[in-house]
Image: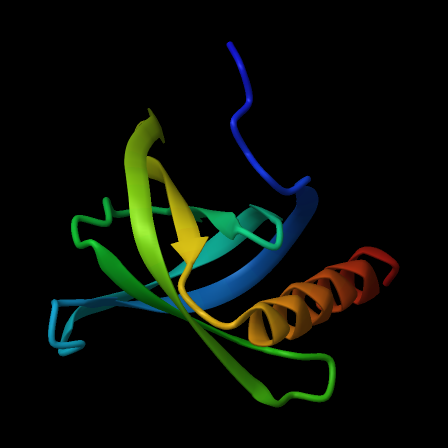
Length: 115
């Protein structure tokens, strides 16, 4: 199977919260999940509930405990095991904001991993 991704992925394991949004960006539901990998194009989110909206807001904290938010589009959501769902999310932000968030999530993961 051919990999169509434009950007290479980096393994992560970051706890994040998310809000599922409608087309007017009203919050429909929220939850907690973890990132499994991330790239300049998007991330793979693992959660215990399926994500059934097109839009999503991912929220996390950086190594200085500053709040980070990034908007995304849900590309797919698949059940990967009993009660576990993997959701592919494509970022919908400026390249600069995406780069900053990707770098910060990787730093947080590296810090946690080395503890």
